[in-house]
Amino acid sequence: MDNETEDNARKTLDEGKAAIKEAINLMEQMSSMRGKLNIKNGAGQRYLEKIKPNMAQLQEAESEILTNYTGKPAANKKKQKRNMMSALHRHGRA
Image (cartoon, rainbow, N blue to C red; front, side, top):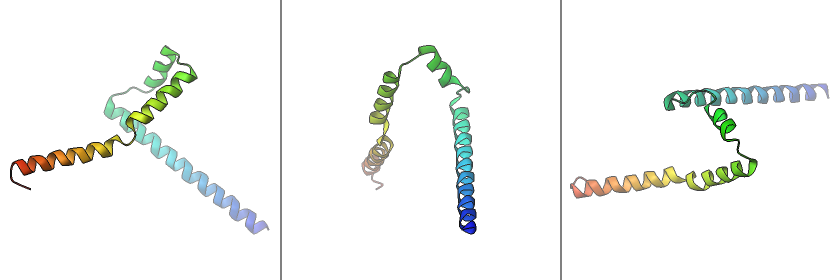
């Protein structure tokens, strides 16, 4: 019984450490992305404080973002590849 409890505690501790490492990695990625886009820390928070949206507006914006921007990169790459292949065919290189 005691050994099982200790194993569960170790497993939980390892999962917690893994979650912390993943969170730190995501925060570092966001920081580097902010640097690439020249966005200052807290810019989104200041914007939200300035416009003071209600929850309905935020949910509407979230649903609009999800409908308009999910799945687009794959379709864009396929179209870009098709355009490149057409250009190669026009120039007799494909």
